Every structure is written in C-alpha cells, then in structure tokens.
Length: 301
Image 1 (cartoon, rainbow, N blue to C red):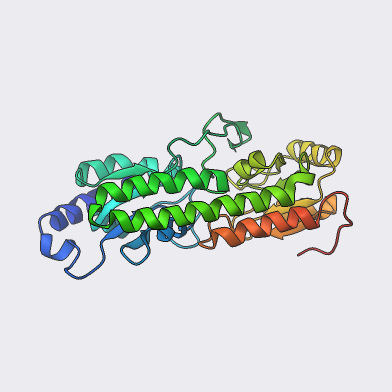
Image 2 (cartoon, rainbow, N blue to C red; image 1 turned 180 degrees about the horizontal axis):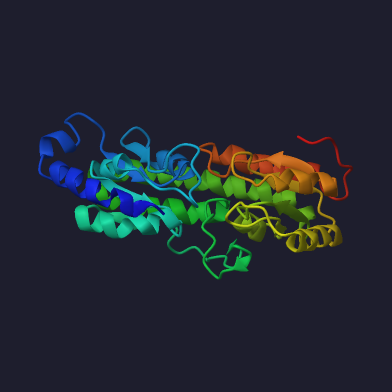
C-alpha cells in the first residue's frame, strides 16, 4: 500500500473538514450517506435502504481491491457518511481503519461479513500459501443472507427513524435470496463434485455452497506463475475433468488465456466486483450447467 503517502495531506484536509460542519455535513433535505467498500455491497444495501439513503462505494470503479490505494478524496468522503459498512477481510479496509478511527472516531463502522464461516488457504503471494481468510464472502447467496442481516442491524442503529421501512425491505429481500439459493441449488444438484478453474480464487464460497471444486490456476497477486506450478494446475485440472475456466478480463495474468487454450477449456468472463450481483451469479451457474464435463464443449465465450 502507498497509504503512508497520503497521511500528511489527509490530516490537514480532515482537520479542516471536521472544523467546518457547514461544508462537510450532509445538507438539509438530502438523503444521508452510507459508505460501503465495493459495488456488490452497494447493490445488497440498496435493496434494504431503497430511496432513503445515498449509498457510496469507497473503491474506485475498475480498481482491484487486493492492491487498491484509496485517495484522500475517497477517505474524506467517509466523513460525510453516517456509517461505514466495510466488507470485512479486504486488505485496503484494514489499512484504513486506524486512520479513520483517529480522524473520525465518531463514525460508526460495521463489518458486514461478521458471522460468516470463513474459507482459508485459498490465497497465496509469491507462490506461498497463507491461512488468511478468503475475502470474497459476497460471492455466495448463503453468505449474502448473513451480510444483509448485518446491514439491517447497522441501519437500525445509525438511522432509527426509518427502521420500519428497512425491516420491510429486508424481509422481502431475504425471501428473494432464499428463492435464488433454492434455484441455484436445484440447477447445480447434479453437478456436485465437478471442478472448474479460475485464475484468481474468487469463487471459494460459491464452490463450497454447492459442492463444487474450485481449482485456482494463478495467485492472489494475479502475476505469472512458474512452469512447475503451471504443470501442477494442468495435471490437477486434467485429473478432475475440468471444462470451465472463469477469468476476469481486467485483472488476470496473460498466462490465463494460454492455460485455458492449452487445456481446451471454455472461457467464461466474470466480474465478481460488478454491481449486478445477481446477474454474475447467474452467469456462473449457467456456465456450470451448460458446460458440465458430461456435456460437449463449445467455442470460447
């Protein structure tokens, strides 16, 4: 992180902002602001808050949360918020927390992944595996049920006047998530035990939910891997009959395309950071159904 380069500027700007309630507070007749870390969170929270809150995303569009370095402007925007709903377990959030608590100690901060049973050991750096928690908790409908419950608790605390409204929206959305989970479970029931490849291990929780095996082809740094590691991935994928390769166009190493071609895999482009959270889950589910090892492979997507 290059977070330290912002510290001096940040202290000056935040001090000025904290000393001027007129310029830095939410103006009358405007919706209060709640800040989240990533776009899928924004989608989930907006299903609860509707038109009562303006939800802002901390991470810049198209940025990689694994390497993201928030600007001073992004951090200062937090001071206009009535709450910060962090995703939990994302590196750039940890780098921010101490500074936020120093400069805006009154800002309520909530971990929306609280209570989720973690997946560990999926990420490595420089070829070395770590037992850190996989941060991609939102790529699971079951986890989303926990996330929106945490969001409801947060909103009831920071905006009590709209409690009844938030509870009604939460109840409707929770039922929708139950239906979505049931639909995905039904589609994938006969595919339990099947394997798929990803370059960046972003679908760990999805795989766990539906009895699938995620084979990470790359690493969390999204850099090229050694020929030895590449051979291990090829052997593993071949032994498990993998037919699918999920990749992120903007992040994945150039080796991803070469590997998928070498194995004759069907490439499916995904964006786990998309605001269209339900659409992304549908893309992943439909790909597994359509390109099962028992089905004939077709041209790359």
